[in-house]
Each structure stands twice: as structure tokens, then as C-alpha cells.
Length: 394
Image (cartoon, rainbow, N blue to C red; front, side):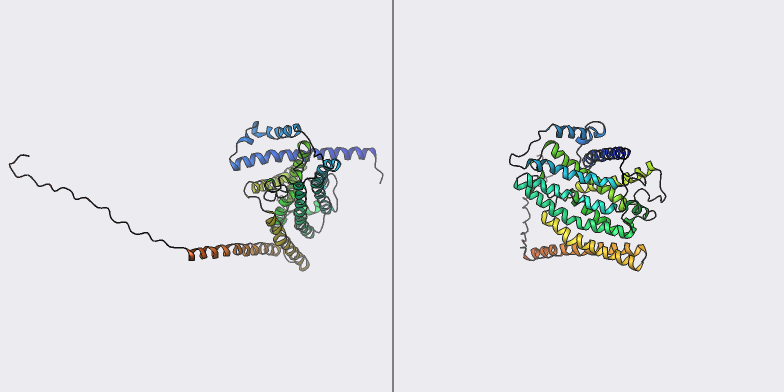
């Protein structure tokens, strides 16, 4: 295929516009998270820096850009400075195939879902490289944790994407959205959306899954030796990836730009509808951050390998049977809810029964102390006053 100068200029303009859209989305998430958590936690500061707190992201950017950018003397300088780029670039490249509307996309691919999976996993290399090139034991430990966490939670995400591809009979984002013109996939496979959201939180490293850079355990994870602009790139990549989870969730489960209207809307309305759904998912992510505490590393890995991965495989088989035997879509919905409810009941009983047994054992071994009844307070005898005889004076 011959690439002309006009094609090169058009692609460059599209990439530049897409980069600005991704950067603007990241800045908007910084502002939105500060305002939303400020409301939830009663912290008025982020809401008072400028009108509606709009100057807070600008203040954060100035602070990061003005910090001294240093590197450890024993670090591998080339790899140390290349690692943030390797983390940010995959977060940006996946936007190439995200359609914001039917015709608002840089490059629509027949294998768009496969392209997303193939590119998104490359950020693991950047995190491991950041820890190793820092020549710090805490950074290396954080890099290993990042690799273990991201590889573990990639499995359920990829399985959920495969289920959506099976239900829509395509790996093209546009065809996936068209398949949800009447019924969104969140109504067909609600468990798939739950697994996708939990695994997406772990992939982005948001609370309660911010384990590999937990300052209470490994100081700062693979980012501990970074400062200034290079640390800001990691920070920017995290928010871009957060918005990627919102966009991907809206495209795969919430009907994209079509549902609930069915027919295609005008381009501006389609983009606005998709963005509204994406920001709704992002608000759920922020709400989880402001509500739940950080997990331990063993709890994090146990959730992936003992719960999410088995549940995703079972749901995959249920979707395969539904397609094989051509059952109605609501059968898969019931199966999805059953697969979700049964483990919740089993886990709740598993956690509740030891607590009840422990409470019963404590009650059986308790020493009952009976307090002696207090004697009634003595009442002093009141002086007897005899009435004076009649006619006498006192």
C-alpha cells in the first residue's frame, strides 16, 4: 500500500488530536476525583482552589514540573528514563481503535478487541523495568508485585472480553456496540461486568488494589526513585488507564453510543452519550477508592486465583452452552446471577461460621461475676416532736 503525504499529514493530525483528548481526559479525572472525594470525605480544599476547584489540576501540574528530576547514581539511566514511556505509550496506543461514535475513530479494526489485549499488557514491561533499573530493593519488590498482580488479573479481563466477542460474534468494537442496540450486555451477563470492573481496578492499581506501590509496605513500589516529570508520566498513565476502563466498560457492557435509543444518534450526541457512560463507571471507581481500605498482597492474589479466575471460566462455559444450544438470552442472565450469588453465600457462611464458633467459645469460657446486692442505706431516725399542751407557750 502506497502511503502519500496527505495520508501522513491526516494520520499525524488524528494522533495529535487523540493525544490531546487522552491528556484532557486524564486532567478531567484529576479534577473530578478531587471534587468527588472531597464531597465524600468532607475535605473542602480541592473544591475551593479556583472556581469549582478548576485550578487544582493546574496547581498539581506546576508542582510536579517544578520539582527536581533526579535519578539514583547506581541506576541504569537509559532504562530508568525509558520505563515511564513504556508505561504511558500502551495506555495511549489503545485509543487508536476506540470508537467514540460510529465514524469517530482513528482506525477501526476487525480485531479491535484483540488489539486492545495485545497492547495493554505491554505496560507490565515498563513497571518491571522501572523497578529493576532503579537499583533499589524496594523498587524491585514493587516491580515484582506489579508483574504478579497484573498478570493474574489479565486472565479474567481477557476471559470477559472473549465472552463479549462470543455474544456479539465479532471482535470489532462497532459490531459489539451494534449487538447491544436493544439489550446491553450488562443485562445479559451482569457477572461479567462485575468481574471486569474488579479486574480493571486491579489492572489500573486503584484502591483497594494499589498494592505494588503501597507506601506502607514497599515505600513507593517501582516509582520510589522517580520524581518530577518522570513520576508525573506514571501518574498520567494511571488516569489515562482509568478512563480506558471507563470507555471499554461503556463499549462492551453499556451499549456504547446506541443503547437505550437503538438507532444511531448524531455524532455529537453519540460521543456525549458514550462519555457520560464512561464517566459513570469512573465515578464508581472513585467511590470504591473513597470507601474501601487497601487489601493485603495475599488477599489480592487469593481474590484473583481463588475467585475471579474460576468464576470467569465458569461464566465462559455458561456462555458457550447458551450459544451452542441457542437458549434465550435471559437464561444466561439467570445463570450469571446464580454463579454470582452462590459463591457470595458460600463465602459469607465461611466467614460467619468461624466468627460464631469463636463467640460461642468465648461465651462458654466466660466467668460470670455476680455482684452482691447493696444494702439499703440507713435512714436516721427523725426527732420526735410532741405537740405542746394546749394553753402553754413555747
